[in-house]
Image (cartoon, rainbow, N blue to C red; front, side, top):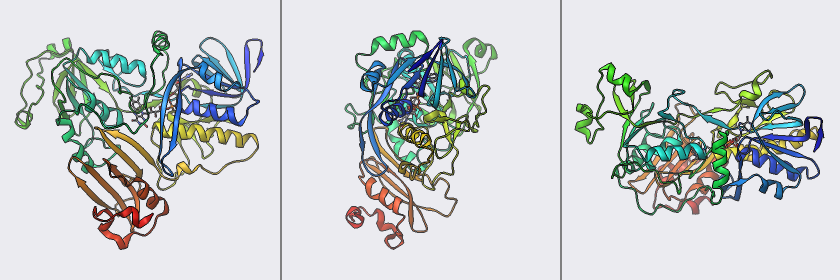
Length: 502
Ligand code: FAD
């Protein structure tokens, strides 16, 4: 690592210690063992992918370990980790500036700065976003004193939250007609809804997803909280081992308000002086229809676009993320996508020379393969970090490489409401127009299997429960075999479909 007066020079610089940045750094370290690689990250802990397993051609499983930065340096002698936030970039000069006033000069840069929660309002002390370990802990401690909270949003975080929270009434406001719209259709939502009303099982199903290992890292975390650092995003199972419990002696108590958004938020004083009334938590359908007036006073109130008002102790804003692009885009000619991400091409290259990007901070601007779509997920962060390192290596030798196979077809395995959920290809009929049809198989409380068919070909699938069909369906989606002859027998539980196609 060459150091001039006041500046450090490294061949490769990666910004961000989340899954994308760490995977990219590890790959670069392996590809260029005699070159210096600098990882600059605002968080004192980095996220390492461990026990990676390619379950099938596109489905993968791994665990994520939060580690102190020195572990990466010990493993890769050519890697140095700088714990500091990047405050500015001078792309023409190939220079980064950190908050400590230091300057770093790169030959190739990969930006993996992730994103932060999109808050419905800024600066309201009762509105919380969950992104990293610290914000999750703050939420946990505030929930411990709460009788009722409002959750806004219908993505993965909201879904996990409303299921996990116990001992607290939850008003869940979603803009769609059904829960979990990002991940599945109304049928799957119907299948899952009873779980919100049932008591949670004591022992949960064995976890199929990535897990955090955070034991023994309390000290580092505390100092992170003091620094107010930009932490890495949480991911699957972020709530495991974390008690999400309010003050009431109840299991689930969730009331969903469909097709609405937040119209206005009132603090207690403002609400009281407005002389408006709020609604009590509906205990049954008739209370929901009649709309009982709430006698209690709450710290904060939400007025929904459907006119209803509810009071609560806290509002959780789970409405997606905003890519952390600000320190990079100021004064540099980046193409920024509508969703705020840095646009990347098929080589993970941004619009600025020698700068690549991966993970939540970037937006794919290539024409994606018909069966793939970008989603800001842990698996895609890993895949992009890995592929970006290969693209950087290719550019160093003046070549370009073929798009990685992982971008051929969308594949994600997760867990919602204690069920294993596998999503494949155009699982919600994305981009298929209206001439597709759905095949369904559903056993209440056990499994929900849906395939999306077009011209006799399988374009996508949703598997909830232990259907164990993911590998067969993945193959059928990837090879686009004509399945017209099988008709509805494709999902006939009496036919061992695996034997048919394997
Ligand atoms: P991040 O993990 O956000 O890492 C960004 C890194 O950049 C951090 O280390 C940060 O400190 C650093 N950084 C930021 N700005 C700067 C700067 N200016 N200078 C230096 N460093 C900087 N995904 C799933 O697949 N399944 C799930 O079930 C799931 N659940 C989730 C639940 C929650 C509560 C949250 C918040 C996310 C969830 N996700 C889930 C999403 C997943 O966690 C993210 O997609 C993934 O972690 C993104 O990785 P990343 O490396 O791109 O960004």
